[in-house]
Length: 115
Image (cartoon, rainbow, N blue to C red; front, side, top):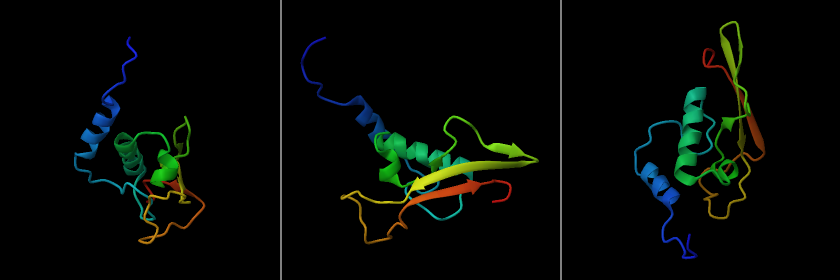
């Protein structure tokens, strides 16, 4: 290895490539609209692929799984998926005039069968 600085960041190239592809799923920001659990998980994964994982929860304000290693609770044909979102916005570079966030932590229990 040498002590020469790296002239490019491969992870940044990967994020730019993902961002250049069209997205037609759940919004890549906070939403109060209903989306099935798989759509919310896919949207959060897409956000992380575009922007990286560091600070992704407070910066995106997106719904993300609250299972932390476990899966949904399944009983009698129903699946209870738990999600949480950070609806506080302390980010100076975000537009706070268009649609202000409600503030606080938000939680949802989502059953695809019941919608």
